[in-house]
Figure 1 (cartoon, rainbow, N blue to C red):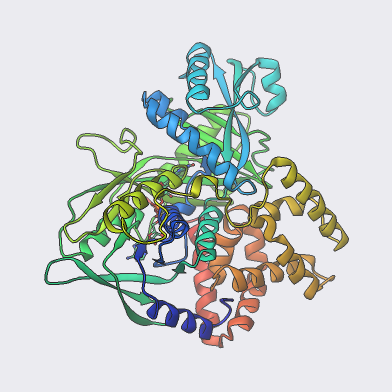
Figure 2 (cartoon, rainbow, N blue to C red; figure 1 turned 180 degrees about the vertical axis):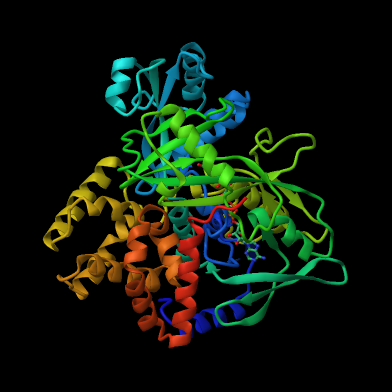
Length: 552
Ligand SMILES: Cc1cc2nc3c(=O)[nH]c(=O)nc-3n(C[C@H](O)[C@H](O)[C@H](O)COP(=O)(O)OP(=O)(O)OC[C@H]3O[C@@H](n4cnc5c(N)ncnc54)[C@H](O)[C@@H]3O)c2cc1C
């Protein structure tokens, strides 16, 4: 169903109210989306409710890496390295267009926290445990070769470097792709649907969840006996809606990333290097015309709905970059954009956020509410499998036709019909030709393919429908907005610049330049009056400001 009008949303809600669901999932981040996808593949009827836009919580604020877990090795967590290593390969395979190989350079310095021997040992263990194939296994490079790999690195104290395999993704898009894959299998997933009550019966078992549709401004009740709470940093708040007090505590750890332009920080190669205090490691990853740098790791106890980066964090990231690249002159006013999120970690008495394990944990309340927290973006598939295995074992043992084991390992996600790199490359060559025929830079095709995979045919159709040779940026923007509204449950310009395109972070100047155009396309499509248009303009301005708003 296209999502391009409020009346369609009403129809969608009618469908929600008239469908008997096996399971309601609260939270449309990577964890909830993964669970919805796994459960639908096994044959369960799923409703997923997300209070804001999909992935608007932590799942859009990560370093955007599908990790092999090198940092776990430092903590001697071999089992976790094995697991995330395996997961990394699986996720690349099922979402090839979106999870792309990215070689990471680890420079070795005379006085660095890692010696050449320690790093070589760690990477050997890492490659073995993570099941890295020959082509991708790590390599050591001399000082001179290192300089050619990343000309910006000063030679002083540099001994050489290691190049090892990681994967880069777009966390927002990965989450949406899971939602879309679940929708394809008849799940119903609603954004802007905030769960505000969990009702129990006289036996204290769950009988219904109530949610507010914040677009329609109405409240609804859904009968269900089975609810999975995948609310990330809000997991304990959701448990509190239940009749029983939370038995778990989360430790929220805040992480900030900053974005610099290529002019200011002309990095060619993704880097993993010591922070200024030589206590943690920091990533610097080129993306488009920018490079993003992160992250921090600071315990967070304030409002989860209004998270800001502090000036101290910004200062720390800038000083860290300058400690490696003293020739650069960077200050806070050079930052193009930034994002900040909180890791929902399971509290471990006596441990600080940097020491607390990133492992996931499932806990079941007395009412039967199943909550899951902790974990990583990388491990979403395995986390989902564990939750749905539990559901099948205890609730659906006798349900006819239900698949007992997870099918997610070998099921390609929506948009990924590519079974190999050569199939993907063939598609890309064709796409470049189509872009070129329409008068666009062929290289744009790569950016679009990483967003939409094999869905690009639909976008090309929209481009052909609305030719605007006078302003190519607007032509492309309009087609992309229409694609999002019709296919991706995009309701607001703020969703468009964050979830659909990531423009807020990686092309903020375009957001500012084309703000009125973007608003106009939405206003026409959703028939907004001037009051609504002003409200959305304000929201957009606030969002743009927030990406450069640092508070102590
Ligand atoms: C700075 C940083 C960097 C990271 N980098 C990486 C990385 O590179 N690789 C990696 O693998 N992992 C990384 N992680 C970890 C990873 O991002 C998280 O583990 C993951 O995104 C958590 O997903 P989630 O779905 O559990 O939580 P969330 O994404 O926060 O999703 C929970 C959702 O529940 C919704 N919700 C809450 N309450 C309600 C309600 N009442 N009704 C309806 N919906 C509700 C929220 O709006 C939210 O969208 C990073 C984390 C941080 C903070």
